Length: 265
Image 1 (spheres, rainbow, N blue to C red):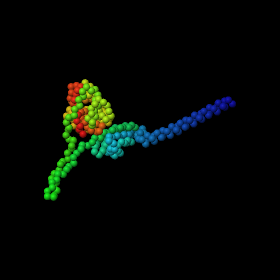
Image 2: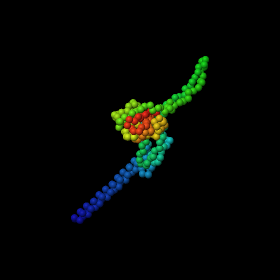
Image 3: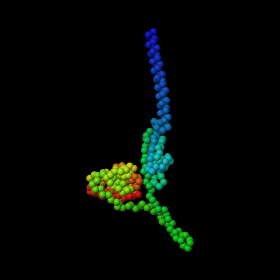
Image 4: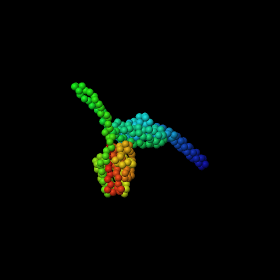
């Protein structure tokens, strides 16, 4: 009787183990199928070769074109983008087109941030008329002319003095060693060069030009967070208000150096 009890208990254990294995197989298959369906819906299944592209613009509500196909207004996330290189064009009335290439990796998300640049202000053609004995006669036109074609002189000067840190707010023309939330950039003074850091959302880039030679075209579309500025170079700045400013000068040592700056747009 004792042996029969042991045999019965052993068979029961085998039955329980078999039921557990079957349940694991069924539930595992179902869970795997659900994961596969989710990945397929998101375009992330293995071997699918597609990913995401998230786009933000400043300002927003700009039209997004991916490989010449309209893909909505910014900000937006585009799903099921095939892996590889893609062309992105961003358009908004009153702003220059933003053109970029992005690389998409399968199963991963790419991010593109575009800071749109205002188009130059232009004057429309105006008819010059002459009234002769009640008749209106058109005698010529004033040709369309860009108002920002001339490069402004760098007449604004900032004397650094002995300050190690200096914060710049170009819209208010305030340059101080005190930090506030409305500034565009700040600089650290070294013996022969400055280290500039942008304050988000501003952007900066150093160019190999004297401040008197820098033009708007040198600064359009720049992106950068940190830049070293040496004597004879200039710093392009896109301010928090989206204005374009250039800053530079010449010096032997940065102590008491004069930095000249000008607004380009």
